[in-house]
Image (cartoon, rainbow, N blue to C red; front, side):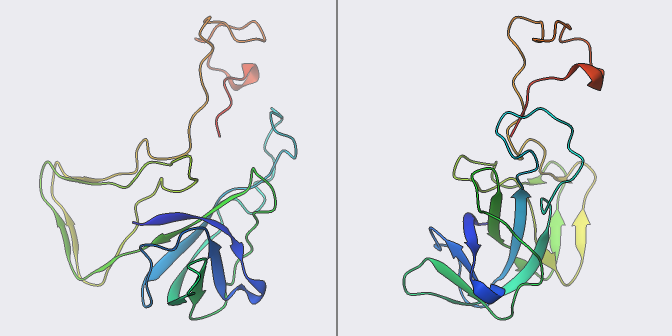
Length: 178
C-alpha cells in the first residue's frame, strides 16, 4: 500500500488534499482512514477516553484524477464519512488498495505493510481479491507492530504515581503513546 498523510478533504468531499500524490493514479481504489482524533483537547491529558470522536472512520473511494499541482486526489464520487484534521492531534491518511484476482501465501511467507512513520502514514495492510485468498499453514497476513508508536516505559522502573511497572492494573496508568 502507498500511504500518504491527508491534510483534509475539499468542500463537498470530492477530493483529498495531500502534500504528495506520488503513487496514486486514476482508477485506483483508495482507503481514507481517520487514524486519530483530538479526544483530549490538550496534549498530555491523561484522562479517560470516553468518546473516540471521528477516529476510526474510514471508507473506500476511487481516484478520478490527480490535480496537476499534485496536491489533490480527485474522487469519482463524494465522500460519505466525516473526517477532521483541524489541529495537530487529528491524523488522516489515504492509502492505495491494490486489486488482485487470486492471492496465495505459501508457508513461511508473510504479507505486511509499512510501519507508521513520522510522515503520519502507514501502519496498515489492505487489498481486494475478487477470486480466492489462500493463506497456507505457516503463512500470515499481519500488521503486527506497524501501528502508532506506543508509550515509553519509565526507565526508573517506577511510574510517577509511585506504582512499579510490574503493576498492570489500569488504575495506575502507564506511558502514553500516540
